[in-house]
Image 1 (cartoon, rainbow, N blue to C red):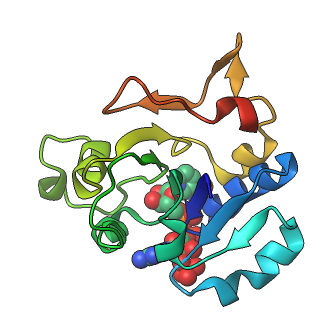
Image 2: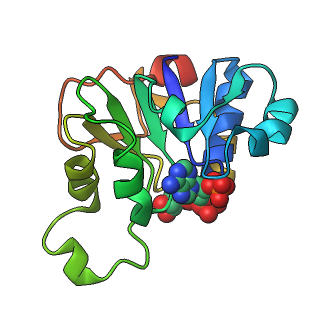
Length: 161
Ligand SMILES: NC(=O)c1ccc[n+]([C@@H]2O[C@H](COP(=O)([O-])OP(=O)(O)OC[C@H]3O[C@@H](n4cnc5c(N)ncnc54)[C@H](OP(=O)(O)O)[C@@H]3O)[C@@H](O)[C@H]2O)c1
């Protein structure tokens, strides 16, 4: 599968709404397992496919919609993340300053998901605002992405916008 959302909480579900609206297939995972996502899938339709986090990690483009503190557990799902794009939706709330040091939180995410290309995006949207966004493009260009550790990511703005 091309897309996955890991995290089915407030922002993960809001993202799933966007995919469902466009009828774009996306895997969705949480810590509770796919059976806990049956009602979300039923509500949003067939394009939303519940999976385990391990299985969802097989997608090429993964929206990371989980608490920042879970990054190491999730990164351990795969031996490496080469070739994958992580869309980092997280915010480093409740993280001690010494844990961040002088680094951006997305640099820490990129370090955890070794080999992945990390794009910081959507973390600055409130979940309700995200659902209202109908056009994620300005003057034909994706407007909601901020590229952190790469400059050659082909983002899904066209499909989702
Ligand atoms: N809420 C917002 O408006 C908003 C906006 C922008 C960015 N953010 C950021 O997005 C992230 C998620 O926020 P949220 O408000 O959506 O949180 P939330 O409602 O608490 O949801 C967190 C989700 O992460 C899942 N999760 C936790 N550990 C996991 C693991 N090891 N493997 C797989 N899934 C795991 C949880 O699974 P279970 O459901 O099974 O517990 C839950 O679905 C945070 O970093 C937050 O700062 C939030």
